[in-house]
Amino acid sequence: MTDLIDIALVAVLVYALIVWGRGARAHLALAGIGILGCVYLLARQLGLGLTAWIFQAFFAVFLIGLIVIFQDE
Image (cartoon, rainbow, N blue to C red; front, side, top):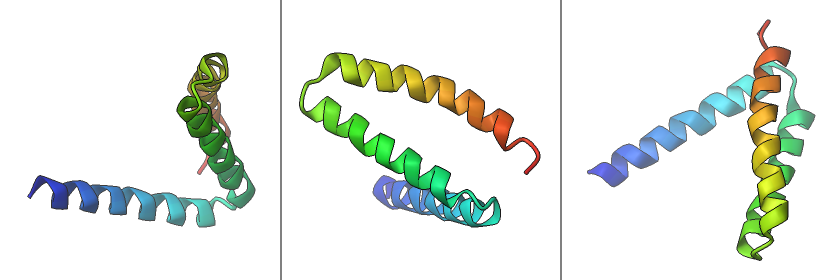
């Protein structure tokens, strides 16, 4: 039962992200975030500690910047 709730929650979040991305015309920004996320995950898998740490700090600051940039929408 918890797996079903987990899948439904993730599906709703992904759908909301897609709808927001189309409405905000932020396709390139979302693609860039996706690429950076993949690089971060690859760095963690390869054991690149410094690179993973830098990306963690970047995403923390980027989240705040994202809120400021898209506050009108």
